[in-house]
Amino acid sequence: MAAISKNARTSSTTQRFYCPCGGEIKMKTLFEDGKIKNIAECEKCKRTERRPSDFN
Image 1 (cartoon, rainbow, N blue to C red):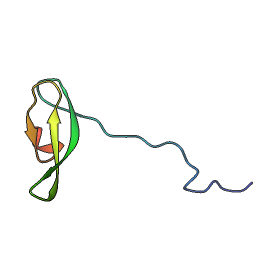
Image 2 (cartoon, rainbow, N blue to C red; image 1 turned 90 degrees about the vertical axis):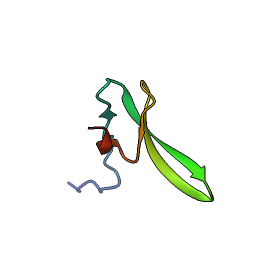
Image 3 (cartoon, rainbow, N blue to C red; image 1 turned 60 degrees about the vertical axis):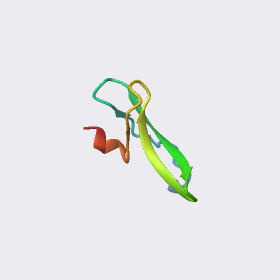
């Protein structure tokens, strides 16, 4: 039996973040002043932070 390669494995999970208000946090990319900025925004209350862990 041959071992399966690491690239052939399909069990990958994505981590989901939730705001204290109950909404799901989505990452967005903005282009401002010639720079790319990544921000986290709550879908429900529209609160924005630098990263998802800042909501707690």
